[in-house]
Image (tube, rainbow, N blue to C red; front, side):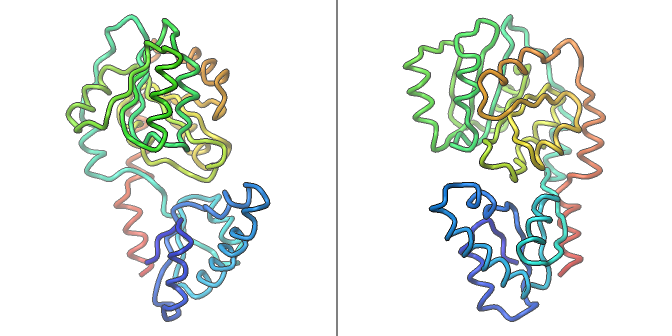
Length: 277
């Protein structure tokens, strides 16, 4: 099974016997290249040509959402099978049984944990609520954008924003307990992505604010209770949506857990793949 978004892995299919391999597409990254400047167009065309040849020779092709399915069909003419992103059964069972206390501080506590990279555009959140006396922000993780964010926080003297290195699960659990709002974002360029971290967020029964472009992620997560969505990379809209969060209204955690269990457990999706092999 060849798992992409890396286009280089598709070269391997050229050396495999026809119908002896499958292609597992986790992200339609050729779509990103097509949306970039004209200088990326040759790379996009090469990627799509490789995808076309590989899909025709593969025993099966899987994708993570309906947008990717349509894109693969458009490029190759091959009908793919959707294997949804989600959460592992073990992690789901572990997190769904935990109890989460209310934040006792006066400020509304916002937490993000995960990769601190370019795609997350966390500067949007920081600029939206930096030095706003109503909010405190904690970012936990590492990544390519970490140093730039630290420099920005220091330069602007945002006293209500803290960045911490990645921590063990038991410490992370305590941070989640203290949070009122869990936050995540993907930039407009990553409109086909469905971040798996958000499935984890949904088990907690916390209010969630997401910056998401129109696409599969927005379609999926907007169906869950307690989820608020703002336009990605928009400081003004991020603040506006954060201010609309009604913390007095409990999140219907049981409803969210049922949806996750019924449709987004990874092991259930893996079984679908085993049936294809």
